[in-house]
Image 1: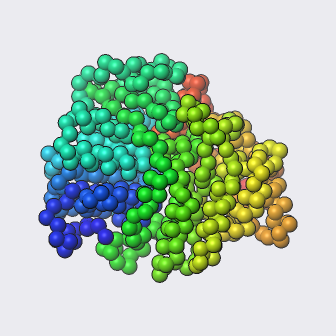
Image 2: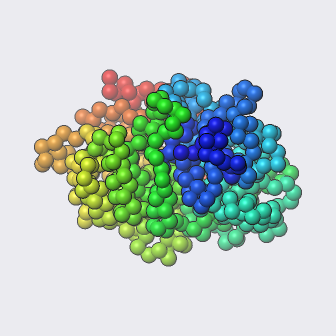
Image 3: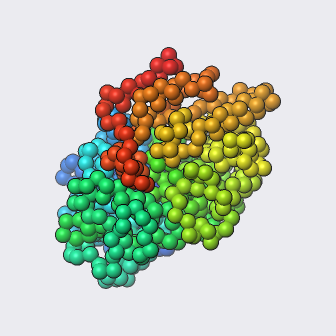
Length: 581
């Protein structure tokens, strides 16, 4: 287990530490937690890692001093969630608990944790590099709208004073960065590393070419509108985001440069997609899959949710406009081998706490496992945000054979009673308006319902009205009607009573009160107990948040209706529940 205190370091006999992680979460040595993933991967290459979970930033800062300075750098993240999303509801009310803290206790991390932690470390240890990463840093790497302050904020690099930012899934870039720091690379050399961002004072590089509205650009280095311009002109923020989003959804992204103050932020292109062998190597590490011993018998709610889960792949090509997954994990699916997944299941079965039920066998979208374009060369040229909206890409191989085979192999492991799919599925991957879109469609839905659903299958149509769904980047609600028809047919044929639970969003840009009225009375929802609706929360680096901030659709710069009044937002959501009373 990684040391978290001076006594634990001493017990290991270490006379130095290479990297010290500061994180806003309690430390759990499980591959569902980013700190554990990066720490285990760097440890594999011989680096000594220590972790300071949930340091106290209010007192004399002893938590930030107790291990001294590392040999190479400090690594900082806010935890598995953006700290503001973790702390506040869509109504901006302070949450009363924190699932990533022992006993669910609230208040154990600051607002904007990355900025707070990094500033403290730069003040105490000015000569030691600070590298920020994780979801909060990744989604705030450039100018963004911040819902909680209702303001346009500059890159977190500027306010945190960090030396480097690693965005996205970080195993490969963090290893390259660590080796570069160890070798004593110059600043110019460091600035060539992939999948990092940094702030530099001075004039922008001469090879950066200004963006041209929302038109595509063939230049290798794109010069975005400045932070100051984005604060003054709404369309500038929308145009910036359009190019940022394209860059996050292509195989060969460009370098992005965004002026701010007396300098600029530079975001380098991401690493090449991980191969299956590389994906397997990220999981073939000695995770204990347990909370750190320092917590003893204390319960960590988030751990209870994922301790018996298995991650099968990374990425999502659904392209929902309100979702941050593609901005952080990428659009292209990177899958583990079935052998790697089965090997992890075999280890899970041997854990004393395992009771035979895998709580989730999936990823952001469970049934995208193994999926990709039939012609990879076409994927390399593609600039679409989504492979499914407005219609499924003709080059997309939607076969569910790989995922069905993987389910079968997992369930054949001795000791596995059930393997549930707790993460989301996209029914538009196996259905269209005429019925099943792939030959394994019926087999997949039947298997999903009867073998991999614990009572109720949760799906996310998000709305019923076409205009709103278009702003969300979601398919027609008619596909849900097809799903319900086939769902009910399987229940009748098999004599089962599996439930169907649809999720919806209120107050999304483009959604008016009359749209929620139409949703609440839609005949296709008759007989379904609907208690899953959430008020839209604008999170950084999403199309929907830019719509909310600017009133413009960044895809075409056309005006969008936005409901910002808290009372009317509450009315949209409460109207939905009145229907169920």
